[in-house]
Image (cartoon, rainbow, N blue to C red; front, side, top):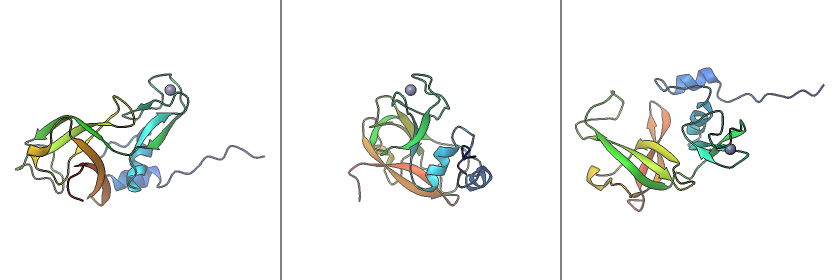
Length: 155
Ligand SMILES: [Zn+2]
């Protein structure tokens, strides 16, 4: 009998939780976190209507299809909203004496598709709404963390 073979996710759910201590890993976002380990930013996309959505949900918000697949995005986009945290949860490498930038970026894949992360290697004065950014990665707790860097700045 050739049954439907269920693919074993790698790493396992238990290992995934260990790699991202303190992160709210759920069945819905596990694929996103597995992508991070490969330095791939994955966003759910509907196989039926091709609409992207974030944060990840098991059903397409547009057509209610359950055929959604975590799919890589370029990570290119424009800053839609920015905030600077003067205090927050302690995290390695985060020093709130310089306010910690958090930006919501509208990704180039789709109008209204947004992802929130920090900005690395930028003066806070240069982090402005409408600024073009691209995706980069930094280590956090030994696991890759998606960050944005200002497009055209540095390398
Ligand atoms: Zn859909």
